[in-house]
Picture 1: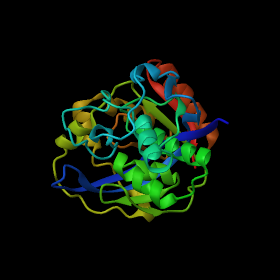
Picture 2 (picture 1 turned 135 degrees about the vertical axis):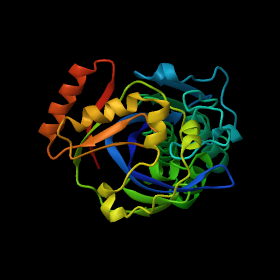
Picture 3 (picture 1 turned 30 degrees about the vertical axis):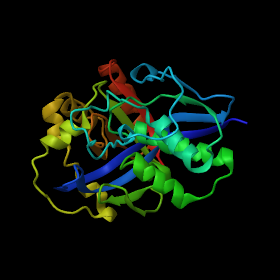
Picture 4 (picture 1 turned 45 degrees about the vertical axis):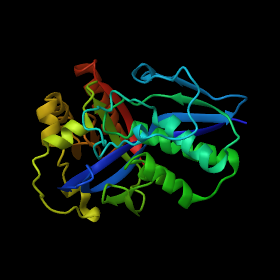
Length: 301
């Protein structure tokens, strides 16, 4: 029996960076939300370990030639809203796919004798600030838990925390207010199907580089009840590293959006609209003006 689990795009509707931490991460406050579209992870029992990646962004990742190890290594930890422990490595240069890291950790904890065939349909761009790798890891944990009849949510959350700061939010899969590294979560009410347009200029941005370029100024807390009045403190350093981020935001601002902002450490930006008709019209406008940009017309769950 194959289990398919969606891995929806993650958005930071606002992201306030408060301070640098001694462990290489940052204390931040963020409003997590999720789109109705994204990647898909499918798992099933198999005679031996297998991993396949397909989809429009499969070429940006690589499946290993050898079967995955049974224990996760330190290279598995990553985050879209916090730098990796190795600050010189970009998310565009993954040393280990997070899907495999999640599978190894789950198998070691719950099913040490099992082997799995895993398929990742990669529709979201890599190193783009919308949690693709983190969402894929969370979907892998959910799919394997379903396959093996595991309902131990605290244990899954514990595994998620070892994989990266964004993975617990993706495992929760609903709007949440994140503090600390972003993995201390307060679930929030659904946002109510807000029409949204995600746009990436097909430029990968290093999370570590963006955080390193943050000016270190604490500009104040985020009120989760008034996230539209918030900001993304990583937008200025991301613009400095990838000026095209500013072009994307200017383009979205001109489409009649009620809000346009960068997500995570970039370079994906999102725009929110009053109606699906307005969003779809904006998508056509962006596609015609910038045919080389990636975009996704969706809604927030």
